[in-house]
Image 1 (cartoon, rainbow, N blue to C red):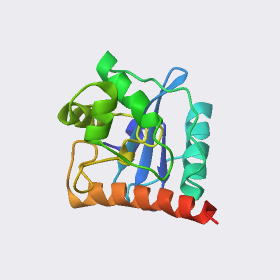
Image 2 (cartoon, rainbow, N blue to C red; image 1 turned 180 degrees about the vertical axis):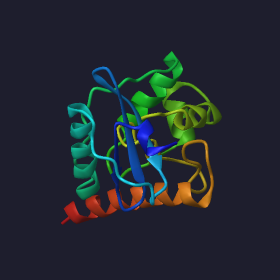
Image 3 (tube, rainbow, N blue to C red; image 1 turned 135 degrees about the horizontal axis):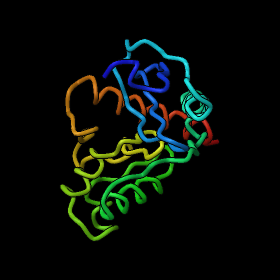
Image 4 (tube, rainbow, N blue to C red; image 1 turned 180 degrees about the horizontal axis):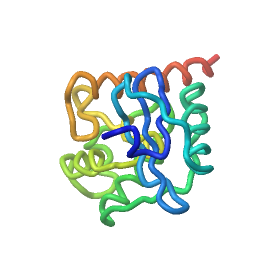
Length: 163
């Protein structure tokens, strides 16, 4: 995807983040290659999204609270709602989420991969029973490095708060 396809592109240590706005909602948060050029926000909502994503990058305890266009099947929305309940610094396996919502691990994995709003719907917190699992329907080194960075970033924050 070209930088011009987004209303803003913000650079983080692990990836560039593309933000797409549709109307009064965020319709996509895309994790892009780390060397993707930044693009200043083209509107107020994209600017607000960038501010909140940067705040999360600075302190993962900061939540992302934006008007999101959460579009998907009823099943996908159930999975994404369950993902949003996973606290910062914690993980759940695909199987644990499947048991919680009465489904299968594979179906939960498919819904995770279909999430167009990562960071706001933190699907990186969902892992395999034995290992990190995939991320965004991918298992390449670069994509999994982003997932590892996000998990480590959140874990450091949790440990920093522990006396």
